[in-house]
Length: 129
Image 1 (cartoon, one colour):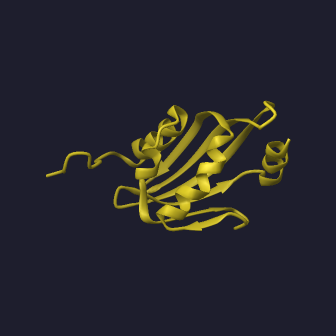
Image 2 (cartoon, rainbow, N blue to C red; image 1 turned 30 degrees about the vertical axis):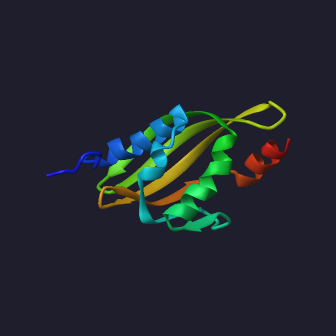
């Protein structure tokens, strides 16, 4: 029997719940990660290991995110590839849109691994204004 608050949802639903939380700007997304979660970009420039480190790596990024939209999700077992459209706003108020490929691996009903594929240099240049 599931305890109150324990999730029993499909892989697709879990990843969608993550993006819904980002879009609604609440903290639900933080609870969806496994304790041993790993986050990186394709080049390993960004690399966080463990739930706390992954969450801390996202908080500064999310401050610059104005809107989040799931454009496409492909799910196979515990693996998901999502194309996400992010609208950013920098400290000067300028806006930029970027589509990002995000590859997920789930384990035991939690988000265990995320690898993102995006133009990190363009993002950082934009956020610096």
